[in-house]
Length: 434
Image (cartoon, rainbow, N blue to C red; front, side, top):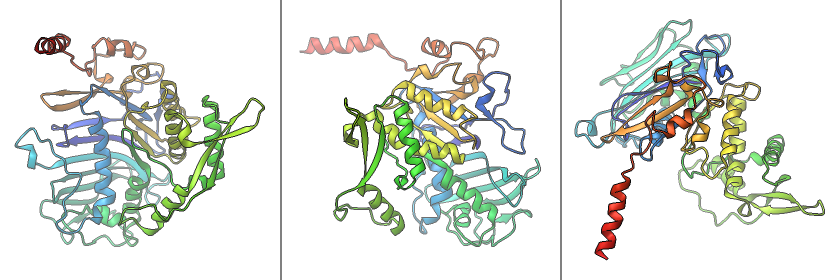
């Protein structure tokens, strides 16, 4: 689980901003929305929603998670001298254009060698420029006290990086270029300590980012009969008119172009996925099945169909789903359903998390989300800042206050500043010129 994430000098986020999922004051309201990882007393929120005007920086915060994932999981593939592709500093300041981007994340990851319950709390920080990682540090809390895993500073090379005394059980000193994260090199090495591989695999397997209008699918899930049955039942229970789903292999995939550089195993899975087409059964007036192709279904049904195997998996495994525009192409009731499932301890047994952006103020409901689960983004003179409803005066903004109504009235900020008279004048000037 993610506890908090600190970002600076990334896209529109110039100054250090902290996005926290730590339930600092649990109180007594919607306690089911809080998870307590085994062996720790820290309460962590199961979901959080981002609100704000267009271009205020919501997507940039979510993309920062994706950039961090690349540093941890993908930077080991960079060759010497390659540019770090996720280096996107704040460009409206001469000082920040060449300054490092900084990320710090506190999270729980499996660590069976160091914790009887199989989880331990970590904090990872990294700072990087276009071609070089200039700082990198990982600590953990095996008994509530901070202990060093590794520390890389300034001009450290793979020969001078410093390790903690509790980081053991394999080969630690592995060669890396200055644009490779140590965690990325060590995590992808079979002879490195189990601890570092667990952290690496947590970000590789458990962090799922879905951008606006991005079609992300779980490959070859049609080979899992139980999952197909669950998705079919889910679609029928949300009034799509679908009775069941079947997959059928069709066509020749020889004319399908797969980009170079993709491992052969993944390439074969992609081709297999493309060849196996889904068909959706709808009951006729004589109670017979009439099968429709995916293109014949509504955009909302198609989105839910592709998303369902992913979030069913995440709810089971305890991963993190990061979604930009959660309700895009979906009915607000379906978006609300997804949030409820992540908050429901009877469903979310693996302590999975949902982090999403939306413009739908109906989801900003005190019956659905706590104050500390609702975050707002604002941009002032090109710089993004974010804050939660929990930052407001708690004597005025109470757990059951009408969040959505007050937000629409502009009491919390995070709404677009529209100059209506200026727009009217613009149209009138056009008419005069005509």
